[in-house]
Length: 428
Image (cartoon, rainbow, N blue to C red; front, side, top):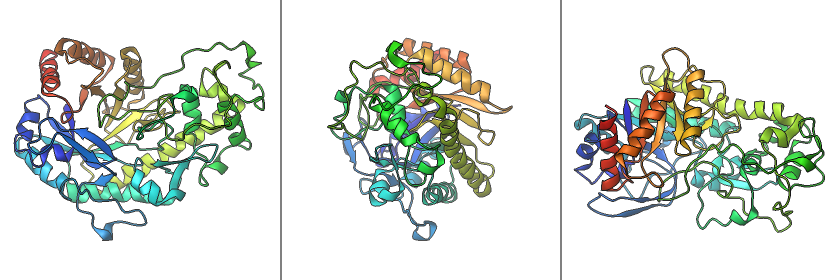
């Protein structure tokens, strides 16, 4: 199955949108039912070309009786029932509708409830990141899933940000690049020390993480770090993706993409040997900290899958997943697989060799009957070249992807949309 991703506002108000999406050669549209703030290009819409979405919103009617402490916002930039209107139009064109559900990424709720957000080792809050260690956050995510299945009646459910968000986040006028934090620093800054998380870690973890980020002399060598003076600066595992190139394109953590800002007192790391992995940085603490982080995502995932099966037993469940145990953001950590899901989708926006290795690992984690999907970028910096895109799709299929999730049918220019259509035809 091939799935094109779209926003409700791409369809509502544009009568030509459903047939345009169907002509791509996809069987389904992943339609955002719950989505974060963004600024989106709308190259086809009769009424506008750029849409400012100032806060996260729920695109079905918000029924007060359905919610607990956390209540999602309705949109003002499109109709409150935009998901329902768009679903009806897409189904009339012969397309299935998958409910694209963003869970813990919600800046408006984070700002309204600062006691429920992720906080790094220094105590800095990440308002975009609701922490699933809190019961209220888990309750909100569960109610969100039940409401989408009950009111939206999708053909499938897609769970994104099904775990803690972290350091990486697109922010307005980002000013963090000069701190020279690398990808391991990004992972360390993604470890949550909110009041629900801090006591789950071994004693001394917070101080150890702070010292590792600041390259502080207070950090003593661990058994996997015998005197760090001989370490070489090397490129660490890059789970990621292209630079932020187009409004609305989401990225996972990168060294310069974060919300915490720089610290006046921070030690310069420019001439300090870097850690080559999070495990090395944490030393003897790594196993216990990793287990806490993995369980946080797994627990939320199990709760939501159980809620979905109870509400709509026959609706397939897709999870945006990353086999890296330190992963945060849209593709949450899933290093041991998830037997309750039907499809595991891996991000394929970066280096093709890294992307195919990630896909192959998810295939290894699959149980009988499960499928793996490739989340394919049709936007910059990928070329608008059908042959090049087809080559990538073939590589992803060879690595084990049996379906392609195409990002993004509303943001792509006509030329890029045509390239996606031709690439799908080329691979048969």
